[in-house]
Length: 162
Image (tube, rainbow, N blue to C red; front, side):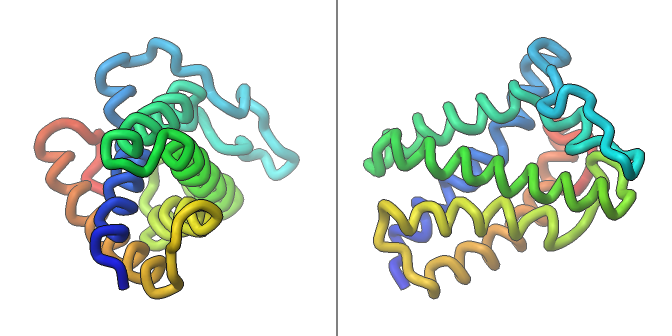
């Protein structure tokens, strides 16, 4: 395992997944257009839900691009990681809507694995990421996100403790 690379990747995952939360906290409802445009599928549930916004996607990609540049991975790698993390997040939301779970509901594993696994797999295109690195990052991200969410809730950054 490559510890420096794992730390760098975890930093990017944290930026990608935290930027939408911070953007919502700073901007409130400004620029909060739902990514799915309010589309409701035949199952009666939205495609992704109102909490998945264009603002969140843009914030994630920009923050991750800037962060990757700062740690020497290049803004292109950051854009790739940020975009792939958001695809993973949208995949989770899509699945949760199909499971009749309300927006922002807790689904341990489904909330963390795609939004960490998808960008890690994407980063294999441009970085020497091994399978062991991916497994380590996903496990650390899953546990860390669960613990960090509670802290961010107490600091009034997150609206829910998960």
